[in-house]
Length: 86
Image (cartoon, rainbow, N blue to C red; front, side):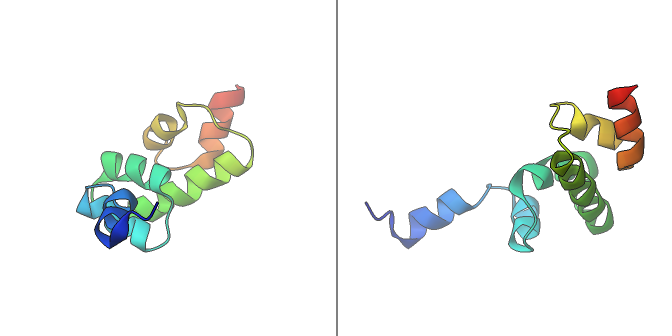
């Protein structure tokens, strides 16, 4: 079933133009959503958050509190790891 171009656009967007801007840059939707929630439209912070978030997930740290811990520890994945394993 073809949704048509309008519906495909609706499915592909978050409804938040700031989030959509970062997704269009190739950043992952889940990480971007958390980053924008914490930092708003701050490109440096959003990109740093997404990089750290992805690195932690690739290392197997998939805890639901990873986004919160990144915000608390200023996007420092080493501090988040210490918190999670300490």
